[in-house]
Image (cartoon, rainbow, N blue to C red):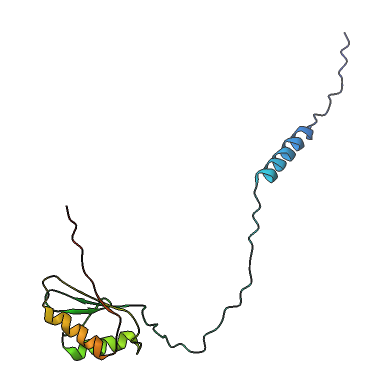
Length: 140
């Protein structure tokens, strides 16, 4: 018996399907990726000529008087309740502008003399827009 041996075929790796899969993945990632273009504006910032910090005067001046007679000017407590201290604090806060509106608010148990002292000092400095804060009671 004669057996014919056929020459064995060399195994081939078909890369066509692998290339198709890689190509489809590449297209998928390109389509699903969002490209965000950041917009930029060139801004030339001004440079300060001096490093001095200037405080802008407030729009209003608030004087608060506690039950014990302690004065607070724009939320800052004064060292004592003498008229000179109040005058110096008002001059510093107002920066010479006596046209600013001023509100005086006092605790219900504060002495009337403390309120009159604050009004007197403000009047001597030339403040004309002085108002006194009150609390309206609700009627049930």
